[in-house]
Image (spheres, rainbow, N blue to C red):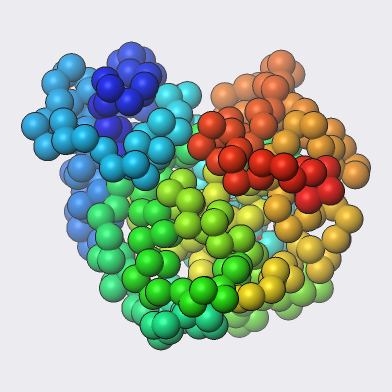
Length: 332
Ligand code: MTE
């Protein structure tokens, strides 16, 4: 949700910064959202956007933000949102192939209903949670985050969801839980990539507990005010905006709380290239290429000047403290 916060250092957008409403506010979209459970958030964000456009703030939005809400509000970017068409056709989802166009083409075969997520490991309240229950667990909101891929491109996407911390608090991790492992769907029947040996399936990712609990870490169910397209990780995925995109697992089926650092799919495939932390860092090159600059998908032409990549993808103020004193070249 675009929260107008005069007193929280939030930069107000000019009307030209706001994505044209026609892109994702049609009545038809709202009806689709009603069916998918993203409606509340979309409606809230629509109200917020309308308010900004008219220079008016609904009374409810004047209430002071909680500490975690203000951390999120301060991080929301006012950069131009990537066109929906680019965000939904230029994807990485190796379960459906390694070409950027493969996921949009082949992911439609994936069955996403019914869907549930197993929560297990070092947690007081383990169990299998239906998607519908997860959708209703906390109020969803729209958050516009930068996503920087390790390959050197980036996008700006309006996600819809809530902080993963909300779910973690509900299931009550034990004191011994130091990490969270995320396992995504691997169905060889519908996912041609899973029948190949490009990765050791299923796709597994992990975060340290404080990273998983950080308010910016989003459990996303939608984008652009709609339910997530399958190629973008339907029906639910992670978005960790200060890390390279591959840390944000799509189509989650399992969340496991562990004492030891999880072995990730990319860490297993190429440990010298993909470290556990994978924080966006222009000063730490990938062994085969520089990470100092990036190309913004959909906005910059092929010959346009590249952008400078920012430390922690521009979220240093919000997350830098978690890595204080760590050698980021060693813990890459
Ligand atoms: N999740 C799964 N399950 N499989 C994948 O191949 N690719 C990752 C990540 N999540 C991937 C995944 C990578 S490399 C990136 S850059 C982002 O998803 C891309 O997300 P997007 O297509 O929604 O922009």
